[in-house]
Image 1 (cartoon, helix red, strand yellow):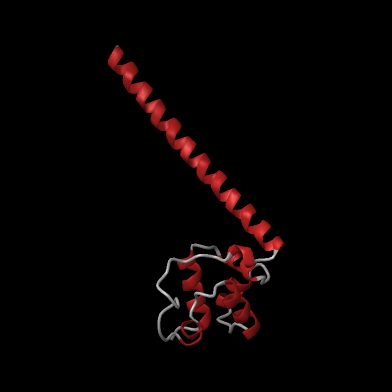
Image 2: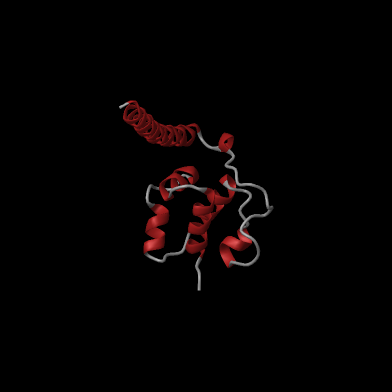
Length: 127
């Protein structure tokens, strides 16, 4: 039988967030959700309240009981960034910036590899 923490982890995955990003977004201590999952613990009502404030599209019925749909409406997921505190906004912006930089580096490496291969092929054809 799935517990609330299991459904919460499913929502975090659906939202495309890491557990750390999720913890930051709701104002929980770093590692909170992973610790709750590891210990198969219950989530406090104060935390559930914070989750629903930040993620109002999440169905409280589904989160607590597993009944119904995960989302209140079948809309695409979006975080109401403007409702977050300035500190949380800054933390999320920093995480996003790091991810963008990492993705950009991977794209540059791939592009360099493709260009190098193309140059090699042209050099072989010229011989």
